Length: 347
Image (cartoon, rainbow, N blue to C red; front, side):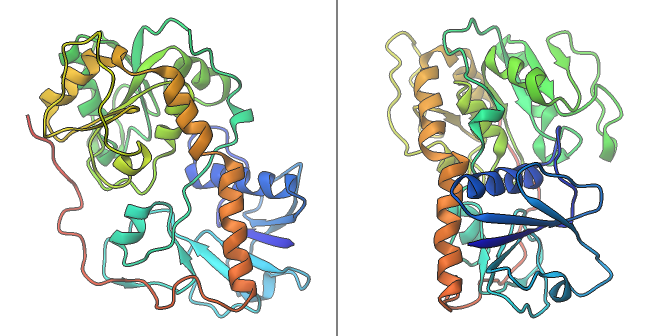
């Protein structure tokens, strides 16, 4: 199959850039499966395993699609009529009433449901980019991973939770002061800031971490930070917003024979972490991070969040549109704007 992956950004990226990394891993996996992949992306892009075309945002997209292409996979919305079968993956949240193309795919079940749809494909990561984790490694601190300048990622909350739990925190994805949107972080001796860190540096920090502290204040569409952390054996401690409960698997009892912590009815906990809107509950779960098994967290990531599984899921959708069947029988519709764009936690 000849597949065109389209996005209005450059590839590759080495630091922050969730969508760019996802389409890179998707294309790489499709090529491994024997398919021919071409990227239509911004100038300055390069790729060793696929052909790269430069997108011209001043020209109609339909005119830039190669004639021999079988299917087009868009990673941004367009109202253009395209000459080839296509699907569109929505990667973010829409905050206003909106009618989607019937061939829209979402990135989690929660993401789909909140936007009036039902079809989704979980993102996957290429484990080769991370190396083999040492699950017996001594773990001395926690980490936060995300765009710390973005208020809804709530790095301030992560710092506060770590402090109350008496734990050190490594922050990947921002600087100490003068974040955009007016965020300022004062001197905090238990926190170390690494800025926009990628590659081996990021991997080394995750491989020495007790867990990811991720108290987001919005409905997270997916969250690559969660999957990356689980791969390194790190349980997740965060808020139960958006896709987080879905990514941590079914709610079940965790083996805490070595811990006095039993959880409360306000918490969502699985074998891979604890989610709660209550700060006090998260602090207690962070204190008892040792009750989670790094090996099980790692295996959960391997089983559910590989780039190969993502590619297989998308191939089924490519075949569906090639056979003339839309992804959704009726176009998904977001009828009303979300009541709260920024969510809250409780003490």
